Length: 192
Image (spheres, rainbow, N blue to C red):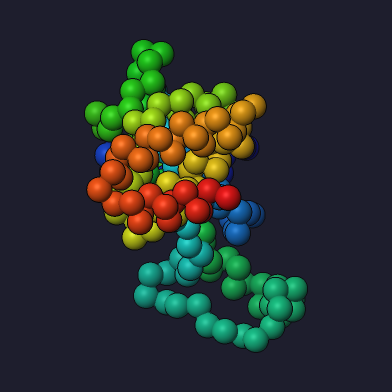
């Protein structure tokens, strides 16, 4: 629990939303990074698709005080107790009986389960299957091209030969986006 980056507060078969610890208000995992949630059935692997910091009360919005954070913490320390950071992660696959399966799990993750950043080995394992690209391209995030590029940059960073990984991913994207050359080019430009 000490190294958890979030606690699940909403869950579905496709994605989950987690809240960061209160003492790490602005420390959501990076966009496009890989996270894992463990449950009795096995681990779920996901990619961070969005994050936001807002009021903990849904009908109450944060207001501007026109002070820097240090001044605000001194004059209005309670404000930071009224904020939370949540991130949403799209499920890419799940581990069952020691096998990583790249399809949706049989059940959503458990609410109040903890979320952890994936290890380098887990990232290499998850990104070793080009099948993760199709669900990312079809992600209902409104910024799926940005998400694909961020995921590929993260995947490349954890490989000895990141360029080789990106070339293989580019070839897979060329097949998947064969009818949309402009979109393919836009994603490739975002890899730099």
